[in-house]
Length: 106
Image (cartoon, rainbow, N blue to C red; front, side, top):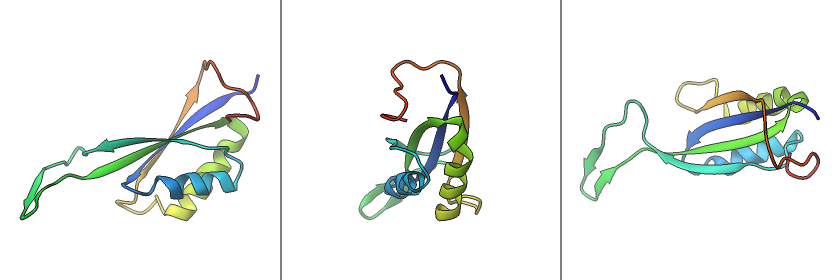
């Protein structure tokens, strides 16, 4: 069984589709969006309409290890994550996973 890794991409609200589209162009077969809010510098701001909270999305992509570098490079190239404030991309190795079917969901 090949090795797998999880790519986590934290981006501003409504950027999840751009992340998944970039990943799919180089062989990823999907992704899962997790809605989140806040940051370490989070302070709720007031306005006339109420409070403003920083909304984020976390995109989880699980892929075979031999595709990880291409997927990460493409996401960074398309979303410019290496620029300040654009987002964060993390890769975590998976040592055990149940339910992964090569060619179907990864």
